[in-house]
Image (cartoon, rainbow, N blue to C red):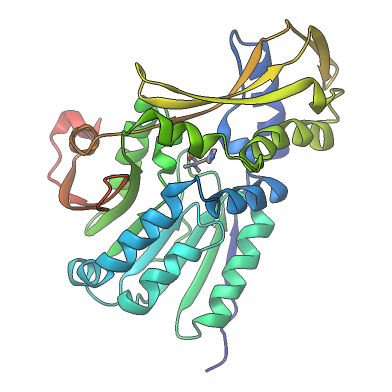
Length: 327
Ligand code: AVI
């Protein structure tokens, strides 16, 4: 069977979004830039390299869990579903599900256009029986799905614990939007990193090869190339630490000296040691995540955890929502 052409839907946010958000974030106190801006083409490749690092346990642990639970997922979702992957990136994890699940359609959604297209085309070549759609979109905002899915069961797949990169209030709003997509029938399959020993977390975000540092610093390269920012990335260093009180890893770009940078004609002063807060990665216990899901009217159906209790994969169904939850 020869590969079918993929169907591409372009909902990419305009460049103005990057510019406006960066200018607003650098004017704020403390300075910050949202982690979604890590993922230009180089950033996506660096993230892919992070996933291969010995210290970065989430990817391989989640893949092992998925390998084990795929037959159960097939039983829960049934055949011929529409599989929608958020943040599809290199689409490696989805391959663990496709052969067992045999969905009718696949829709990959990612903010990084070239990376998305490349992986969707590869998927279409490798799975000629599958109808492949790709949509370039920012799924952290309101999600207008291209009309691809037809009447059947929708299984939304959100791996990698990307939910951890949302603030708790954003995570709840996001789960509520997903729930709205699942009507009348469907489920969310979501990977969530677990709370654990802080040393393991520290190593995962401070790897010995410096790939995570390059990933974090690439944000500054992006400001230089796309917004013509006048700044020297060597004037900043990568920092990542576990904030136990907030239950999150924080990543920062720390200014090495007092300096001024210019972005789109605006000047921003940095004190020595002052940082741009570039990412939070929240870690959840199973009970905390279940409570969050229930607040979004999603019903925990099944959770799979690896033997070392590093990572969890949740299957959440559509629960009857109370009027307050639908607001
Ligand atoms: C995509 N996201 C879940 C990763 C995380 O672990 O929060 C991004 C990342 N940042 C540094 N390393 C990986």
